[in-house]
Length: 457
Ligand code: GCO
Image (cartoon, rainbow, N blue to C red; front, side, top):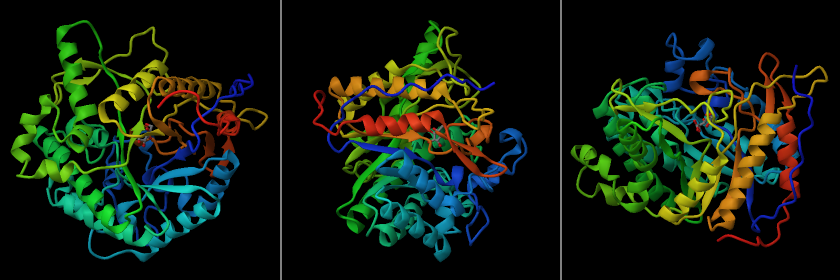
């Protein structure tokens, strides 16, 4: 029986003038229309077709049918009162082979989406890459091929030319450490490779692609505000054993440092630098370290790391201590780690921070009254936004918060078995049902007085 307790309303809070409230999604997870209007296959279409990769054999073929229902979904955003929407462009929808022939129908979809957002008074935040690499490029080595940085730069130029007149917020990548480590190093994501050398090449080439794309965007859309979206999680040893402490330090270098450090500090983490060196060419770090305007942060929880000799890293995800509360997907709920992460990123990189993903999975049910009372998600969002404001009071320069996600959607290896949305999606009918957390978030946004913020940087 779904919880019938009423969601709590947010306390009256104040936020810096101009604080951005948004919601986030990604192309493969919500669009569907996988073979419609000329879209080419991505590595996730290929991965989902491989038996055993995705829970229940789910795919992104239909997802939330956002390709056709985007206007209805923008209506939900208007009801929320958000002033920004972060989405990603599916590279193979606009360049079916990843390069060469352009698919006008694909570009036209994003024209419709962007124009409708602007008409609704919602600022489009465009992420160029949220994991759906064109399969045709993966057939040429994908990110393990240094040429992929150039292919990405050409794709970026197409996006800048077509949308740069209306889009002024661009992110190059979503979570490079996640898709590189899980896709090429320790398994669990497309394209399903586990090879240390290919992982190291991927890390370096994605960094090169980021720098090249920043240059293209600076030239093509000079007034744009540019960033990248990193997943950042404190890596804690799963036990007191020395090998777990060493594993946590190593995992931290790959998971949290392998991309922001070369991009913002012009050097790889010491635990990584020697292993990347064979794949570097002269001048690469200058190509990678290009000035950006903000740091996009995705954060859900800390990680508990253990030594593990079954993957090229020698480190992996360990057990969460039994006393720590967890969500339905098994992630620990520790808002203090969010506060600490915001402060640590502020101290290390000294950029404005936008939280571009935060939220939680929950076993959501439609009650007999047709409502979805997702109290655990309301409690999570309340605790994490409170931790964010604590970090701001302590000096973190946080300028926006985007909930993951507007809609329940395709949760990668978990398929549709995990729901992260503040809107329930009844997949057989594609009906959208705003959850209690949707209404709570709308009230939070409304309750936020856009007065000068009394504390923080
Ligand atoms: C990520 C991705 C999202 C996920 C969300 C929940 O952080 O893994 O950016 O695509 O769906 O974070 O796992």
